[in-house]
Image (cartoon, rainbow, N blue to C red; front, side, top):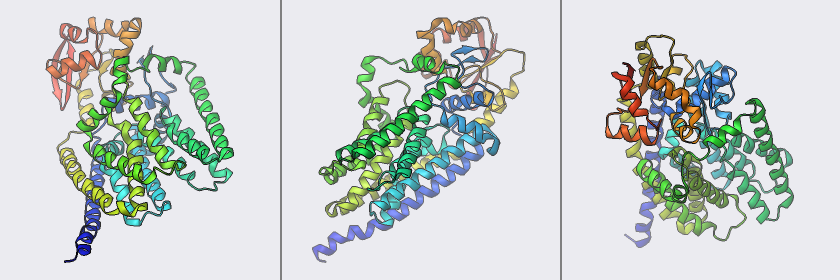
Length: 488
């Protein structure tokens, strides 16, 4: 066999491997999506906070106060996702179904936008589909697909705003529509500002000053309109809520370690993300080092920078890696496509990454088949708690939302921060703990275990929660992974 034949052999193998692994990942995610819509496996306490914001909105409260007759508020979430969740709950029947549908539709549109970007960059259809599979392969995307958080909606609005700006001769209509999309992305997630920043910087570097100014000014007006609307609709309290919750309870030293936090979280939860990020950065440097006016490398760098900054705050999960993962896949695929010397190595890396991703994806599906329904467990818990006029304290607000009730506590993570920074606000909570003012307390972990003790001291509730729980409440039963305590 000639050396040329030997060198072409891997290239002939890669398309088949790519098609097989892409089909496997897509089929696995389709099965997980159907199962999740049916059983609602992933409505964690984070989703519970998003859904409570939507529930409050439907009942005429836009950003509940830090403390009021409703109970405790406190969030850092921007509003578009939970507002749309509330509105479309009239279509989908429940808040939960509405939120899950919005997330799934958003991820589907992310895939469409990424494929369109790749095809406009003259990437072949097969390599374009490989890029879509690469986006779906990471746990960050799968979490966005199956969860009820606003990250996927922010990502798709940002991505389509970028896609509209790719044409070298953009007209006024598409330019202002992209400004609208960037504004809506900001209205969904505060930190989703790197898309418009990438476009403006790219156009400035290319001396397209007029278009850069038009986009920057239009988007700035949009941002201002979002902030004014939030302020007015919340009765002027939204910014004081954000100030109270903004730091996440972190410190300066914690913030300085942000890159390490990101790396540690990715290694622990989403190694496929890192497996794709590192070669994407390397290929991008080779392919784009002379292209200082293109949007994509600037978008990637800004998304990575913002992601690192986000991880400078405690309580951050892999959902915040979605945007940089999308940018990394686009950068990698386009770099491979435009540089012939990268074709074999790059295609091989993509194929092997997709093959590696099949394992965690299949394992996740296997876990889903044995996973309990959060909604079913929540309904069972509430059926076992008699109504006596006292509120139920649920660490996961979904426990109450599933039964159509208003949660007393929006977010136990934020409550811990408020207990430290605004101790007088927490007095009602501690009074109810000490005087058995809750008809039941529903927790996610066993507070007697080492994990539970650390969790309820350092992450949720804090203060004297464990001591007050032990003194005034006794363990009743478990339902799935929910621990129920009732007054002594």
